[in-house]
Image (cartoon, rainbow, N blue to C red; front, top):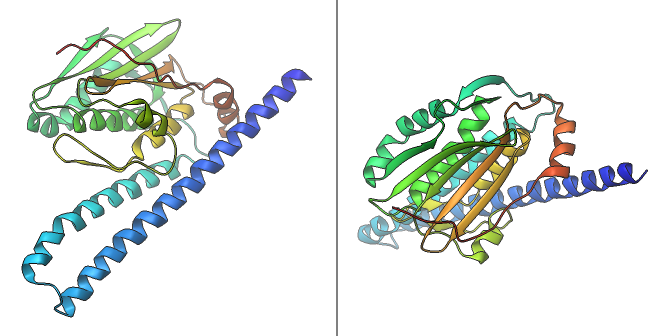
Length: 271
């Protein structure tokens, strides 16, 4: 009986958290899109009425563009997240060599890495592999690497580390950038989002890690984040060597009983 009660409590907790995620997400979308369209309409009205000069108009365009980029990120992340919320969603299992994942990321982010002169390094076992869903794992690490580049200082390095422990595969991305303090860490997975800027002024919509966390749970994994302000951040994804293709409801129950997030600090930094 006690096991059944614990299972029900875990399920209730998960349903509450999922409801908070959906409510927060809808609030974020409506607020940001309303704000963006209001600014755009205000600008158009003033141009039509000739109440602002051409110089002022062009001065305001970068701000409008910045808002549009932020909202595009949000809409794109929402689209990807919605694909996994269908009740008939199933993982597409395949063998994935971790170093191949690193190579694909290196190729896709070559321009961004070059622009900041960042050295993207692989550390660990190049033969390590796991059975997983390629779409989800690639999306997860694209978002993590994009953030690492965004908040890295030019000329620094980013490390992709692969290891195995107690039957689990641990994949980490470590940057040596601006890092985060406790307040920001505590807000990472909650709403409203904190809009941030990268070291080159890149806009962070604050939604990508929420999607990452959701995708990690679909793979029956865990996410751990360690960060020190002004020193850098390490994001680790801990995955089973083979993800069971269980029904959507069972994955939710497993996730509710076993997920965790580490907000520890003080990992060593090196250039």
